[in-house]
Length: 102
Image 1 (cartoon, helix red, strand yellow):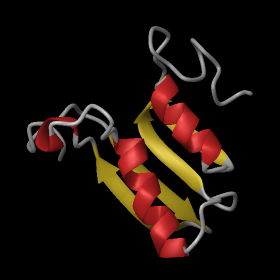
Image 2 (cartoon, one colour):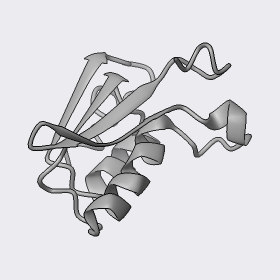
Image 3 (cartoon, rainbow, N blue to C red):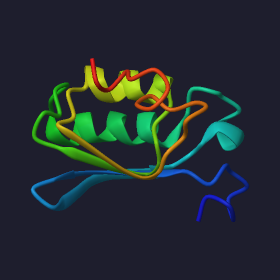
């Protein structure tokens, strides 16, 4: 989906109790904004939908390890669990800087 949209191939889904609350692909190219990573884009509507800043009862699923920037947004929104498919030892917010582990 993101590739067809001309974006980098990243996507994120925020769930609570197994139900999708918000989802997004990367919007960096479309919005011409380097802060529009899929994780960050998905967190914002999840907070609005649930009417809370804290998403401590939610999980986020992403196809690649969140970078430090996205890891910070995930940590600050207090998402309880992060599931990702592909590690990123060069840019990862877990394997390189451990932003999510703090």
